[in-house]
Length: 296
Image (cartoon, rainbow, N blue to C red; front, top):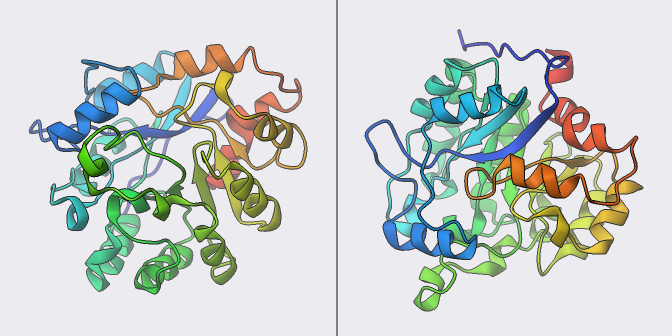
């Protein structure tokens, strides 16, 4: 039987839907040293520590917050083995009062990925899946990924897609071979149309495609937006406007911990022109619904 979450929503002040496992139990990093250095430079996070999952749990526990944790499986395109999803899920299960495990599966793994998705949810308690199309080298609307989407939809858990530019590979010759075009949120529109029962989260302010992301989230009932990867003080005005109005029930707090900490994000969010009645929706209430925790 899959381990159960032990979150107490009434105790939580916020749910961070976007944090990263950057190092395995054995010290294996989630990215190659070259790409990790590029990411640190992009986020001005030079020499930041790669926290263990236990350290991440304690960080959020001290703040009465919960966090979604995942890595990225991009071995086909990057040649770098991922941190095992099973390990992340097991470690999150030890801190089920504050951590929500997501998994990442490379669509290029084909039917093996489909089988693994089912096992991860049914046996390990994984509560969603992360895709990074630019790192994984696929377009979200490519039919190669459709069997995996179908399985995730049947399992009743959400899929989170990186959108917009990425700091990974930034400044590296050729961007490390990473192609930004795959992370245009409009490519996820086909997925949302073809899998209407699949809850989809578009991660990050989607520079340079913010309007496309807003259009998809407004048009498709099953599409949400997380606000990770940027300090709120840099959010484009149309994103703030939609978060306050049409998308107030569809926008989610995410940081990008550890390169952007929840403390930094929340401090800047406090200065953002967000209606008082909308703030708790963004910080917690919307995430409870999207993650299926309001019925847990």
